[in-house]
Image (cartoon, rainbow, N blue to C red; front, side):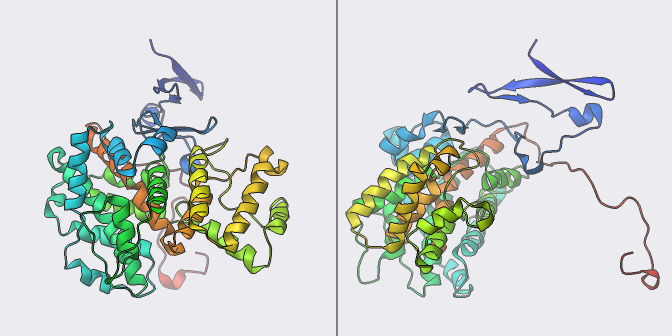
Length: 432
């Protein structure tokens, strides 16, 4: 007999099965608790609630471990590419040469947008946020592919997933060009995924962007490190929508909206905003560091520490090396980057931050890299969305492939008024 937990309520004992994951994670299965006892659990923010069983990504926040389909993120960052890692996440295994070629060809075949979509871009005001455009245009793109509306079909999924992963970078680049009043630059089949995105972002009609290998590698690494991160806010949103059997593009558009929140995808943007504030105040970072140690000051180090990782963010170790390389190779003279180095030095060596394990996280370094290569701050969260797309697609597929999946329907503990009755308007008082 498998191990069970016991819950006693009102003198009655309920047996709750213990579920053990492949990495020895233990969970109490309460799926039949309400049915058997009439009680539910209350877990504000779901911090202690497992919403699903998943075989995609494993995180151990105490030990600083992140693995995609069992492969350590350190190995993938050193040896893989974003597209190869995307295939791994979506399909569960590293692709063969033939599989990778086929997937890459599908990305190339689906990189263009329907020409009529240009009229949709023209409908947005000049100051529209790229995340608003991205979410809207992902949904709009689905209208040009009627087979999406037929629901999930395993035989069509490879094309649909490649279509979304390819078009999202085209939409993102077009959104950037639109917001800056620049002419649209179309993708080129000769370029690989990340190079093509940079081409569409920064080329001019009369001159292609100079694709420096170190810049392409840095952005590809940012995409790879953000490709999935277990059941975060946006991924959980994608799974919630997918449980209703909505199409892939609709689920991804919902993920974009969740990611847009400043407490989720806006963290790397907050890092640059913090550095700009420090610079405006004429500080080199020293005063800000001291203020951050005082809880009453209201100053907070953005891009330091992590809700999941109680040790060092494993992605930060990887991206720090790339950050150092690109700043050296580009010879950039930027006062904000000097301030960033000052903050990093303090966080890694000052006992106040070390004891509290407030180490720089992936958002800190990715924000610095994106600023260094010329990506504007309003595009930071869009870059995050492109990177996270494989994880969303993988989670969508996992839900659709699970025959027993039911529509997600969390419960609540109601704390509003008890039963009362309708009053005609002439009898109502202000508080009635």
